[in-house]
Image 1 (tube, protein in one colour):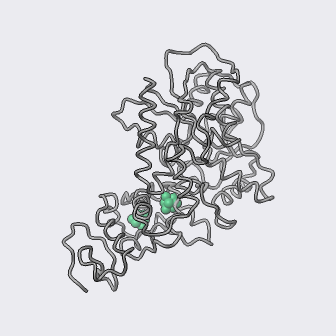
Image 2 (cartoon, helix red, strand yellow; image 1 turned 90 degrees about the horizontal axis):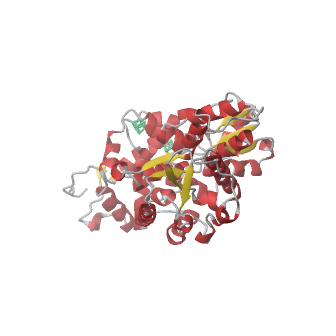
Image 3 (cartoon, helix red, strand yellow; image 1 turned 90 degrees about the vertical axis):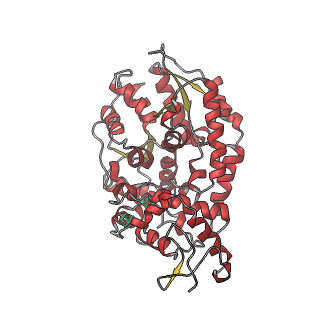
Length: 415
Ligand code: SF4
Ligand code: SF4
């Protein structure tokens, strides 16, 4: 059916195993939307080309958190296959299920980077208008780029309280000075603000000097990147790099694992001279080096919900457990933990969607905590906190469980 375009990349829309869409001869295209997609797919990078190596083994689908929810048919193996065959329905919601948790790509024997494939495909939808994007995701990510935060909030509110609220500060431990990046959630969300203030109190008490960008701190752009808006992401990256460069500080502490991952892998890559540190590792150092002694052990059954952008994307899962062990005793583990942890559903723009009961990964996670007989779920990510709290508020079965940030728990134990 028609001649093949001279194209090095062997993707395309096929029907009856035959290529049916050609870029140059638009007369045989199914429609203009398909033409846009084919055009963009043909221009894609090697990341997507690697998807051609998929052997359809299904290991990814077995490790995808949606395998825990029978109501949802989303499967990374099927997704890759449909993409290769040109059968993906861009008009459906399917592509927005992926949370970017990384479980599938950590296990794939052919090192296929599912999250890159998803990002690239979402880029086609976002930039070329060739499919469905939920309004909530579009509006929120536009706000991130335009207003520098997800909620069109006043940037001047960030850290405004720092100037008014006196904090106990120990003498500096060393000459090291850190730039502290707190994240939008921790600037404007009520529980996020508790997470922020607890972390800063611990750093102050331990004599770890840190400074802020105040209103120049902008959204890291993680969701903007993951919805496919590369132009918007570049704007936020430039804002951040320019602001950080102006301070002369070269060590940055990130409170959110999403910001940490974005800073480390996109904003300040290896040769930038920056040292990017997640705040949980600073807390681990404080406990490990005895900078703050534990005064009051917490005698409750505590479990740890691993944020995906610490455990799966950055291999950080032992340190939070060391901290909890020092504060309360050994962590009570849930069915999924560490590198095999279950995503809360908030990554990859999931936090900006409104999934109904029966489709929420955070509900499954809380059910696992109930099965483990946990009294407190500790986490170290404002998005996980938000998702888990949303499930608690919507289901009385979870009322007996508390959610705390790891810094919040630590502050209680060292005061
Ligand atoms: S694990 Fe990798 S090779 Fe196996 S089906 Fe998934 S993407 Fe394909
Ligand atoms: S990144 Fe996570 S949610 Fe997305 S397909 Fe892979 S395992 Fe599933």
